[in-house]
Amino acid sequence: MLTKQRTIAKEVSISGIGLHTGNKSNMTFKPAPVDHGIRFKRVDMQDSPEIPADIDHVTDLSRGTTIAVGTAEVKTVEHVLAAIMGSEIDNLIVELDTNEPPVVDGSAKPFVDLITQAGFEEQSEPKDYLVIENTIHYRAAEGEVDIVAFPLDDFKVTVMIDYRNPALGSQYTSLFNMSEFATEFAPARTFCFLHEVEDLHSQGLIKGGKFDNAVVIVDRDLSSGELKKLMDTLGINQSVVLGHNGILNNTQLRFPNEPARHKVVDLIGDMALIGAPIKGHIMAARPGHKHNIEFVKMLRNLYKQNKLKMKYHLKKTSDVILDINAIKKMLPHRYPFLLVDKVVDLEHGKRIVGVKNVTVNEPFFQGHFPQKPVMPGVLIIEAMAQTGGLLLLSFFDSYEGKMAYFTSIDKAKFRKQVIPGDQLFFDVEVLDRKRNIFKLKGKVYKNSLGGELAAEAEFMCAIVDEKV
Image (cartoon, rainbow, N blue to C red; front, side, top):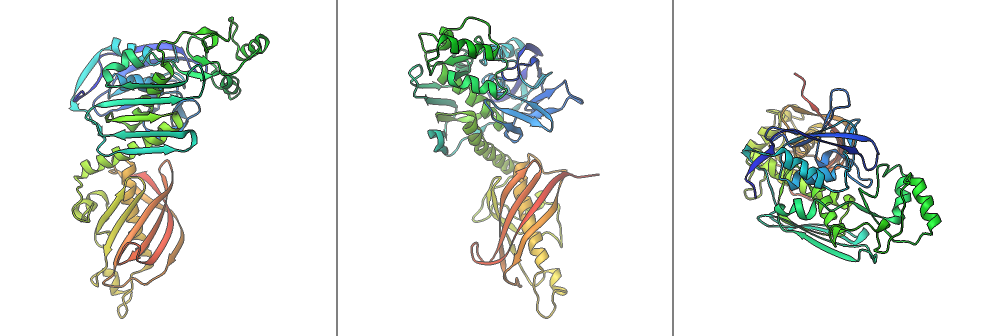
């Protein structure tokens, strides 16, 4: 596998129509500097907004993957991303003058050819791989979907599909390393079933779908009159037959297992949304965009957690994940308002457990109350929120230059007094996220995690850029 990042040597362009929108589309690949990542740029919109190609910007999965920032969106990005990942490109600007890349022939091959035409430029910085060190398993009972990542010092993908259709049957394929992608997988075209075509059209999709950019699997009988009516609905004027090979219009497959190979293309394209190439073996049974994205979320969380550990040199020692020195690197709070001493558990993007040792030397005990010291409830909530702030770090590549602000506190209850000598455990989890607004739930236990419940609350927090 490559050790250095790379981009393309020169800019190259391609034109066509979008598969679902039918919009005429001009797309240009441009070189990008190290650590830039893959970004789509809508040059037809004011200020040419850029959309990072990562899972945090996925907004829709209707027969493809859509990414967006505000009103700027790009639909059906998976074939372009698969070509970029299959070509082992780390940094690239993808300029578009509409909201969907050209479908061309329905495969990733035209984009791979375009990148090859541009040539490759090795860059100075090392590649940032996500290394799979432990087995990661995603399962969805719906559709009997399983996707698993295994440790491997290379990249391999194995896919099995079973649509219980005579034209397809059960299909299996494996990509053993990225050197095979361009010739063995990129040419595999997108496909759908005949029964889906009319429904997709009624949803306003496949406006650019033609027989030269998709494979249609025949899964029901139609009379010649019904077939003509369907083609009229789709605006297709050419002669069409059901086909004797199980494929509409007798389209010839490029590979005997072309649909399975295309599922590899889609999976690699969706995994590009992790934001880094993988060292590992991915095995998938009956994958699709919806489930690919759920699996990618798991891998993206792992990637961010690993980046956080590297950034702050975090190493778990005994029962401590973050000591006070690491916490001070992450939070802007200082004496007398830094109220978390250590973190003992951290599940990236989901949950955190922080600890505070309450001593009689706390400055607030001088006035609350001198004869009977009790920790103020508002400071218990503040300590819980600071713990939550550490958790929110895991959603961002960098927390520097950002501030966390309360927007609401709800369902706050105080169950037990907190006094000198107590040790507090703040168990905080993310309930919901909308862009940079987070809903958190926290519980505070005395002297042991899951011990006496001292307080609990739900709160909203907004992460905003710090104003100078």
